[in-house]
Length: 129
Image (cartoon, rainbow, N blue to C red):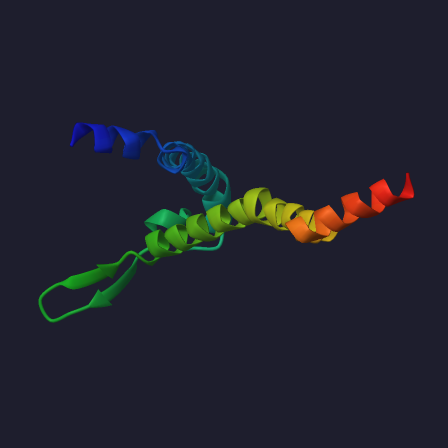
């Protein structure tokens, strides 16, 4: 049982996935900080609170006032779009270009000759001598 688990863990794809998750988490923290400390203050100039993440819409009710944190939702959407854009520009687009280059420059797969074709070729070469 443990041998099978060890083989599963040592597969390249599992290790690569673990590395991708760690790097993705660190990258998400960087983009979140960028959005929180640069983008949100710039957008905060256009909202009443001065900070996008603190922007709430108050809806009066019968017994209490409901506060909808619309700024937090907008901030999460901006974070998602920023992360998706950088992943696309840094990973997806270069990989697509690399795949296109490989496809354009790769020779068509050759079918190996059969034994009869090889023997015929050898016979013809020997006949020329």
